[in-house]
Image 1 (cartoon, rainbow, N blue to C red):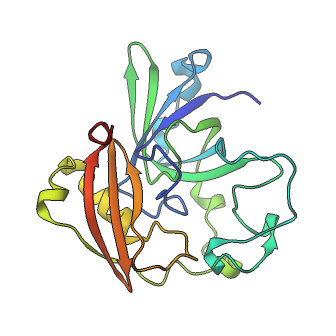
Image 2 (cartoon, rainbow, N blue to C red):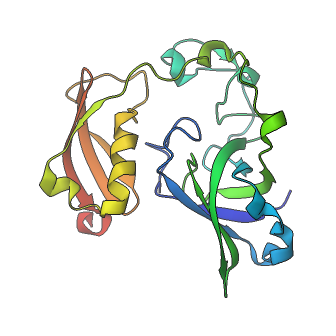
Length: 227
């Protein structure tokens, strides 16, 4: 298997990444092909599709060996399920699958075709093994049953952030940041109202607390200001 591309996103670390693709549509990403695969002919016709499948590597979740069971955060981190009944990153082969929306294709004179997508749940720099078009009549199953993950999260957090803090973030990124926070980036088994959490978002470090269903942003700083 050869890496064909890498994706650029607003998540330099794993913490805070949406738990599934497509949950936060405002999140943007750009896919840059490796030099060997920058031939425009390789994406001929892709502009006719609205969504894509990305096959990628859990590059930050590699382990020696594997376990037949894992503890899905969705179940509080206390219940074990078979690894093949979950989307845990800790798998025999660290391969991920995401459905994203294709926003546009840019032809860069140096980097070749760049795919601009939205709704990605990948960390910045994630290696991509393959890209396939999403085909609605066969890939969509409205009556599918999804086991213990049959419903989306039953709550959103009320995000409180002072204007002087949110103004630090460029306007085009504010909606995405607030949406990420509202979807509760904490591990689902952590619920300490006094704990201060830190999340990297693009070039910013966001610190916050959560009590009940209220998330309060304590501080936002550029990463360079923390050095």
